[in-house]
Length: 256
Picture (cartoon, one colour):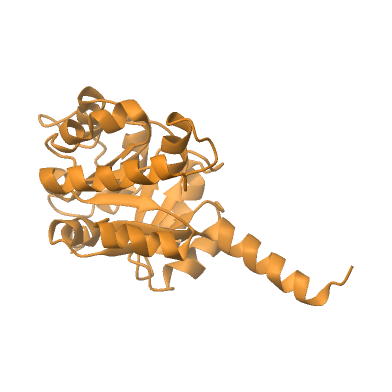
């Protein structure tokens, strides 16, 4: 008998355990396999700002699910069809970008739930159910899906309490780059105004009782965010790791 797969990331957030992650934008199952055994708690497979498509994601999930990290998929948009496809190939945690309101948060949750709790389409032989081999998958799936939403504009930040309080939202991710742009500081998330907004966001989420997440490639920033109370923190990206280390290695041996 094939056992139903529980969601360790969702459980960790509920228990208040810090989860350290890595962004993956290389669209490569080999790269995903390499980083999956590095010791991170979660790896984000991106499709919003990466040329990732479903066939690519299947191979990346197969690679990551062999390692220590829980895979998370970020759909390109808050769209029920995109969510359905990601869930059917086996993702249990989705990060929905650019959620601006309570209504949009509710729509994200609904897209991940089978009826009557939501509108997720039913497939009886998808990869998520091990091609129909997991007994009771359809009745158990809703409880293990983890829904994360991104708050990344001034308008969304104004409503962060209400968005976080939506039933079925497991965590709120604050996008520093888009938030910086929305606040008038494009390309400068380190600006004092943006940093105050990021700190204010996690304080408000603590009051609501929902975990906060964020991404930064700067170690000092990451530790500061953790100190502020961010619970799921991406501390880098595979693209950045490859670029910076390749640059540094070349520089050691190249002379002008």
